[in-house]
Length: 430
Ligand code: KE4
Image (cartoon, rainbow, N blue to C red):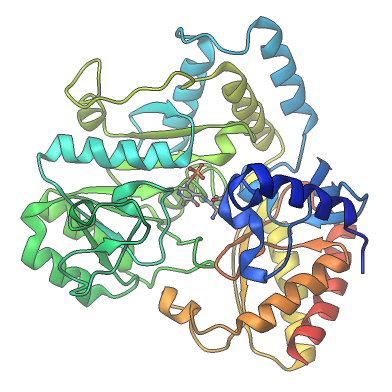
């Protein structure tokens, strides 16, 4: 059992001045019923906590660390940019380079606006869709997470297909009423919503491959159905690719599937680990934004030169090293090792993997939406998480989170991960 005494001391100090001791809830390890470790430093696919324990990292700061931590190209780019100034609030060339790169990578994007988080990206896209259509209602799917936006922190309402109920204190019921939540992968239910209310809906927003309820694959035809329904009813289709964008492919899920939304929310990878978000899409819609149009949206640090220098350097490194293909190869090696282990143990747990994203669900059968995830064996997951962490492998501290592989995960790292995963599964499933 690794010594984590310094982490414990820091966590106790943190709890005195930060709510729950963390600046984002998932970091508190509540889902695995333990105290978080405090990180000291990270490099490549490895992280070290303040007690000196070394771990192979499969969280990758929740997605941005696609090259691994502190890649030289990103460090050099940020250092160079910082020498010229860390923030301007004035148009700068990094913004033009990044906007052009996003336009060239992402099929739906003709114009793009930079913001500072994924939440800002989805919040702004929703407001823009409402301004463009003149309509108020939005549709989201249960189990999809789009950041802490009031109108998107909504669970299924009592009459699930009529209106939502707040999923957080502080969200007025009247806000939630404008959000319709529907179970994912249920074509008949989404068709029912559009038949009844299509003309009142401003936007439908989804993670095209939901990765905030583990990792869930859309059923064949489901994304195309959403594209057809939204086109038919004049509804803005928004893909939230904050996690999948620039990771599963240069152009995200919309490149892989050939299904092009009207707007896309982006983030994480394009900031190289620094605070960033972006939303983009058809010029006809984007030009409704101030200062051109009536939809107001702004940000002091939007287009920050350091964040964009980091993101540009990261994307260029991915280009230079054929990163997306290599990530898929590394992901396949990882997947095969885990499947071999499951076969040895005679357990048919569900392992979903696409590219460098994965989730091992502690249940057998099928995972179509978050209701299926809720049936997982969370106690077995908790045991697995801690057994792996104690042996030097850090998986996401929640069954509802996806795992992330980086270009820095080498054969030795994967071999150690396979060995640890086998031991941890034996403990969890005993
Ligand atoms: P941020 O506001 O946290 O930058 O992005 C919100 C967001 C939007 N859309 C999707 C698809 C997302 O996954 C996220 C944030 N992802 C979580 C991980 N599940 C961030 C981790 C956290 O909340 O601390």
